[in-house]
Amino acid sequence: MEEEAKHCPIGVYDSGVGGLTVVRWLHKVLPQERIIYFGDTARVPYGGRPRHELIEFSRQIMGFFRKQGVKFVIAACNTSSALALPVVAQESDVPLMGVIGAGAREAVSVTKTKRIGVIGTQATVASRAYACAVKELEPKASVYEQACPELVPLIEAGHRDGEIVEKPLKEYLQPLLERSIDTLILGCTHYPYLLVPIKRLAGPDVEIVDPAEATAREARDRLETLGLLSGKKAGEDLFFVSGDPESFHTATVQLGYTQRVEHVVIERYTI
Image: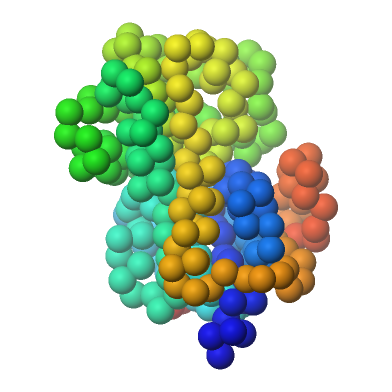
């Protein structure tokens, strides 16, 4: 049974296309692993939702993944990682990890001045999950957080650069840059899609931390510890959404994914 479990897929979920930044790094770090991706596009964005809703959403998604026979799940969503994962991870018999711990560890490892900025959704920033995670690792660090409510809807609509993106980005980054940060955590898995304008506005002296990369590497370590690393890829990746599969497929094709996208009524499931 343990040998069979190794060949089971990894589940990855997010509110929309953001979690595909984690999938991209998983393909680089764990090319032998098959991935089942779920985008909760009918309920995106997550950032302004109350905690009890996010917990229920994650329970439904974990129930769906259990039916799919996954061996491990990554909550590729900072908002879910901050608010729902502490509850749902205790309830699930499938190992579940988020993205915040990995991002905090990476930021602490690269900062020189211990002045760290975080951009994220309203819910992630309000939770202070990154500040707590960073302070636990480096008590002397100063963490400055900025909610960016306009960014996820822009990214989901296909905007990656230009004035429509740069205008709100300037407003969000300015308070952090005035604090003389030397490290900026992209506290939402959607934000790496804006890496070009973020780097341009932040300047060369600010190190950008993408938790997606660190999460993929930590997932590899966790799977190795659990004895669940696959030796070969057993089948194709699968993509599911709670909203319109066609619009999501259009977005994924632009990002280099060509697999068919299927609709799922996620409310039918629970842990």
